[in-house]
Image 1 (cartoon, rainbow, N blue to C red):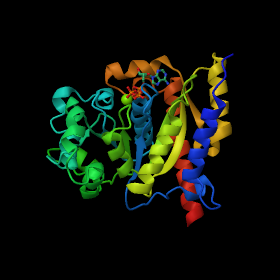
Image 2 (image 1 turned 30 degrees about the vertical axis):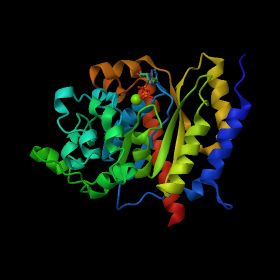
Image 3 (image 1 turned 180 degrees about the vertical axis):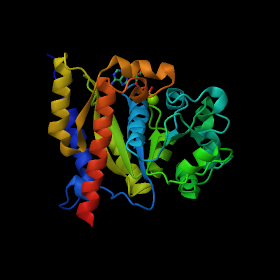
Image 4 (image 1 turned 120 degrees about the vertical axis):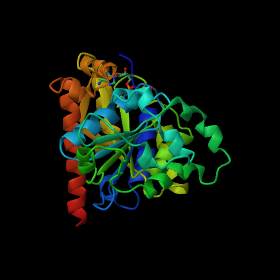
Length: 315
Ligand SMILES: Nc1ncnc2c1ncn2[C@@H]1O[C@H](COP(=O)(O)OP(=O)(O)OP(=O)(O)O)[C@@H](O)[C@H]1O
Ligand SMILES: [Mg+2]
């Protein structure tokens, strides 16, 4: 059977350790404690394409909303898959993440409610493709999203909403999930600069770890120069295929080398997950009983549990 490149794994593990484990603390000791004052901002990133970033942002967001959290997904990918997957048609994206980044709109004016109660989205359009070039000479170009979020009312109060929606929007957001494009470009850097932590979906396939060290080195650079609070939230193994021995081998190698940064919950390869976006629905709404939906519910529970434990130990 094909072997996973051990050097690649070890390199990624070392980089992760240098980011998360300075001076005698464990990675989890150092994780930023979620504040009750502001939402926890997570960036879902991996420059590798098609590894499950958008699927994770949509379904983790839905699962968190299902257990009573109030969630805002920010679609920072010109492909707009998170917007489409959450049922936001092109004609509903009047104000988008692009307008927010270039400073033409306030983020609260870009927020659109989804059909999932408690889950809102800042949609994306293809305009984002031009953002990098347009922001090239703008001051604080890496801080555009961070600055926009800092100015946002905590409940993201939306205009032109019904009374029911307004009641819902009285509650502040507890989680922001930023979906990134498959690139370490200015959009991803903006997301990392705005975030508390990064969540990395890793597909259980032979080349899974290719590029992980580069991603972790980018996290390190952003941490040093742009956002000292950026941490690694966790690594989520996606598209796990139990019939494929390689999936097992990838999962156990990643765990051996990256330890407790890897979530216990594994997202299985599941056809219902891949069908759901074409209906503009999260898998959890399309079929909440399928194995994929159950896994994302478990992932949300594990995430909340981890953060509570950190909060308790810090109290
Ligand atoms: N657990 C899963 N089981 C089956 N299909 C999946 C699963 N997760 C994702 N997919 C499918 O794999 C494809 C890629 O997933 P997704 O769009 O979430 O990846 P991505 O990392 O966001 O891609 P990109 O880099 O293009 O933004 C999609 O067609 C999606 O429906
Ligand atoms: Mg995507």
